[in-house]
Image (cartoon, rainbow, N blue to C red; front, side, top):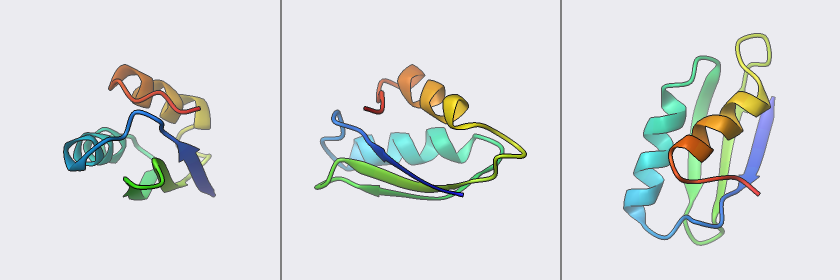
Length: 67
């Protein structure tokens, strides 16, 4: 399942790297792509292994809440 999230706090490459590392550690998440200019993250989510809520929670814990 494709998931697209707006992340208003993305400001730089360091932010993008943190988000990629954070989501890369979530079982069931793959193909994480961060668009710094659009302040958006696209990813593939396997709903049998994780949930949208779990992804949002991990982002919030990393300091990048999705809107």
